[in-house]
Image (cartoon, rainbow over the protein chains, first blue to last red):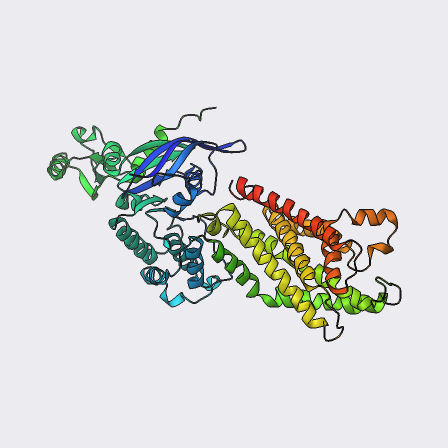
Amino acid sequence: MLAVEARGVHKSYGAVRALAGVSLEVREGEFFGLLGPNGAGKTTLISALGGLARADEGSLSVMGHDVVRDFRRSRRALGIVPQEIVFDPFFTVRETLRLQSGYFGLRRNDAWIDELISRLALGDKADANMRSLSGGMKRRVMVAQALVHRPPVIVLDEPTAGVDVELRQTLWAFIRSLNAAGHTIVLTTHYLEEAQNLCTRIAMMKEGRIVALDSTARLLSEFSERVLKVKLERGELPSALARGASQDAAGAWRIPIVDVAHVEQALRELRVAGAAIASLEVAEPELEEVFVKIMRRDDRPAAP
Amino acid sequence: MTGFPTLLHKEVLRFWKVSFQTVAAPVLTTLLYLLVFAHALAAHVQAFPGVPYREFLIPGLAMMAMLQNAFANSSSSLIQSKITGNIVFILLPPLTSLDLFAAYLGASIVRGLVVGLGVFAATLWMVPIPAQHPAWALAFAVVGCGMLGALGIVAGIWAEKFDQLAAFQNFVVMPLTFLAGVFYSTQSLPPFWQAVSKLNPFFYAIDGFRYGFFGQSDVDPATSLAFASAAFAVLSWLTLLMLERGYKLRH
């Protein structure tokens, strides 16, 4: 079954076109990344999925339930962690989670609420008012709120923006375990390293359209490569190596390589050419490079 | 099981947790009105035959406080949730338009009734008044608070900023309450203003509520209940329509 399906979704706010025909499928159990610069339409797409916004055209469904016609089932199947930190200052952490649980019609959900509190390291603050929590703590409560009804599909909209390293690690360990237990995860983030490590498939959006959609491995192999980064103290790069190589802003050469044998060969050629090496590094393919290339490739004027 | 009972509970908790502001303060304000107006006007106004002005004033003032607080409850809850953004926690769950409407409305009625009880509790020991037809009084209390609770939802959804809501309160709710015969019987007005008063749905809520205490009113209570209920029904329909369309809530 498809966890999330979007078909030809259009959405405009006045003259601003936020979504210009988005279609995508997320399969059950996937860890899916939704990437793109600010204003690409990621949050609008997520809002339309959760019923916070209404698509002008096209349809969306969660676990096979249309988000408009069958909104009760689709929302029960979906847990969204919104991007902005928001909270209700009238309540404590535990009250907040109990209320959220009740909105889904769930009573006697305390065992799961306790587990969420402990898994997200909120135990010390369970009876503290929301107002007294730090930003990172509030973010954890928002994650717990999104999970309170055990949704099969979990959407995290930039969950680690402005969050410290420790929380980021606890959060990802928890989300990974949920994914391992069968939950589908959809993630948006500006930390491309996170996306690269976590996501099995990635969609990239720009100006309301999907401009790339493939497995992370394929995107990496197609748009990025393993390179040998060499900075020379003196001497020239031998012409055999200069083919296909490029120089970055810091003056280091990026030489594409396939495997370790290739590295040895390159070093030999440098030695033969009498070049002195200042620094040396083997860089693995990076999603950041993929992202930059795809965004540039697609740098054509927007359709009128 | 739907989320309605939880949302109703949350909306009641929301004002109850700050009951000093949401219940005690309006009760005090009403007492001040009573002291000042009873003193200033008692010699000039004969509202109902055989009913001292101080007594006449109490049900009207109580109803005014109830109406204003029923309006304040739903409207302030919605505007705060919209401005702070925590409205998403209510929009993301599978709550229907009817769930949302009934929960905000129910909490407004509870707040109105609690404030009304507070006003009576605070005044009865000074000015005991009869309650000749308590069932009529209760019916008008519920319909009146319902009407304003629904109007509060409309205003809370429509307003995008606190000052817009304040404008709604100052230019719509306040004039309608003050001109609804809280301080006088509309029988004492010139014919033109009597006719104007009868266009004001708040008037029927106050007049009918007063009938519950004194067995006297400007308009027959059944007629008043029909007009007040009709206004309540129209506002409820409008509120449900706005919620169903997602007006200013689901963009």
